Image (cartoon, rainbow, N blue to C red):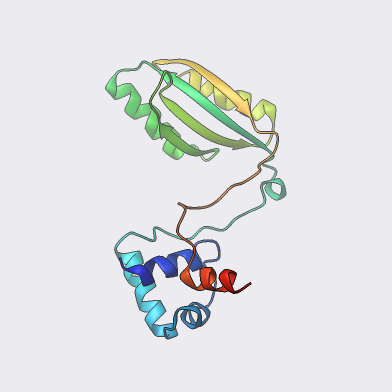
Amino acid sequence: MDSIDFEILALIQNDARVAHATVGERLGLTAPAVHARIKRLEREGIIRGYLTAIDPGAVNQNLLAFVRVTNNAKVGDEEKFETFVRHETNILECHDISGEDSYLLKIRVESPSSLRQLLLRIRDFPGVERTVTSISLCTIKELGGPPLPAPVSESLNSERL
């Protein structure tokens, strides 16, 4: 990846629908050149896909919780738990973490009772010793990808202000 690839990623990261011509104008490239670079970034797995940011309230998924799971399971049991996590749609993220806990889950559900039902299913797995749940009161910041350097074109514009 070169600096132009980073520039393209920074420009499309929060708006993947931005026109290739617009990106090209900002970077001094043609729309077909931008398109070709994006296609290459997709083939190489750097761009893994495109997501739509949906308002959770609009689909009745108002409760956001973070659940720490302590798991003392055998290797086979851990694989079953991880398979469950991959297929459970209400679990948005799962991280294998260091420290006293084994996993950190990001969960979105419609109500406390639905969270309770999901926690009961999680606690039912062999080796799950405990769960600790924190409920989010509000989201201050939520981004869809890793931090990237600001595009040079934006840096130059902000210096002029």
